[in-house]
Amino acid sequence: MNVAGRVAAATLLTGGILLGTAGAAPAEVSLQAQTAATAVHVSVTQRPASSIITASLFDDAVAYAAADYDSGGSSEALAAPAFPGRLVVQGPQLLCSELFSCPTTPPAYPLLADASYPRRQHDTATASGQPTGSGPFVVTPLSATATANANNNNASTAGAKTTLLAGTAGAVTVGASAATSKVTGAGRGVQVQVTSTVSDISIAGLVHIANIAARDDISVSAGASPVDKPTITVSGVTVAGQTASIDERGIHLPGADGPSVNQRLDQAGVSVRLVGTHHADTHNGARSDATALEIDVAVPISGVPYIPNPLPTLPPPFDQVPQLPGVDANGTYVAQVTLGAVGAAAGFGVEPTLDLGGFGVVPTPRAATGSSSSSSSTASAPGSTGSQLGGGAGAVPAAPPQVAPQASGIRGFLDGFSSGDIETLYAVLALGVAVLFIGWRAAAVVRRGLLRAGRRR
Image (cartoon, rainbow, N blue to C red; front, side, top):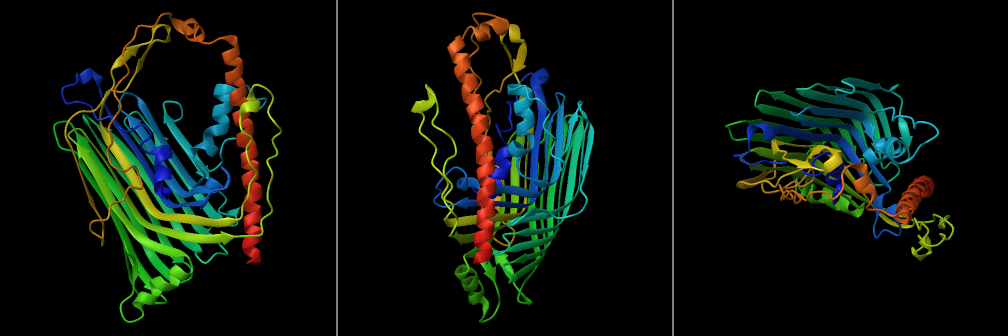
């Protein structure tokens, strides 16, 4: 999966928007919307990967905004000028609140504004305006604001200068970046607007772009066909001071020197292309995305010492689990940078109820029906489809069969486990936390090694 696809996979359409049947009872129908936007996103992976550490060494975003809305009473907005992913930002709190009793509460990620109705309806995160990060990812965060109410939510964030892949042939610098998300529920409809902007971009010391903008607008109303308008704009492209253009095939410079631009980039292991827009609609909902530029950079690394696996052999019965290998950080890495990516989905969702005995009544998804259609377009590049933020509308899984529980309440749940099963489950969870921590430390060591190796080059 490509860069923007991983950004959206964490936040945008996980589980999908449920596009319900037109004949559902009004009491069961709710309006739902999800959004995600990043101004800049970078990931670095080793190919082929020698370990789980080098398989995803970097996966960070600049100017990130996202939202989740349900007219049934759920509304959340997130914004961060620098965002390393939900697992890093919210994982420690989740582990301590849901799985373990931690001696202290993990500190909250300082650059995240998280508003959720009715828990916390307004949140802000303001940075000092000083650069943060090191090596291939340095960003200057400015601010983030999020609000969430019963009928709407908003998220906005901004960052200043960003430097990516410094010291490589494909170094990228950005002067300013911003992202916004706005969801408004009105009567029997919902309107969504999500944007990302990037300005003053330099690529490989050769290409300069004045502005990049991506925007997605969706409107869904009862009794009317959904409307979605994903758009991208790339302006002020120059190569060595000469006016140029970018499409899905790369950069084009008029005149005899035109073909040499892409040749010089290819020799440096750098490719730049326009991605485009995509949308897929049904009778009751729409989902769409827009991704402006994708930059791929090949970075060879050598001279990094081998890092052995620090974990001892596991005690029985876990001694049957294969021992994790060490980390060989040498090889070819592929860095992928996305500039200007947005996506959104909105529609009428149907939430039938399923009685779970003593657990009470909870909603479960129902399969979508009705015809669907999809089309794609690209600014300056017709025919290119952007699957980065959510892809096409896939089938929604059907609801599970309604089986009457044999025992009610928590006792019925616990009866399904023996004491040995629970001990094994706890041991596996504890081992998983240990592996995550060690992997995080190993990734930090590898990053420092790669930085030193890059400087030696």
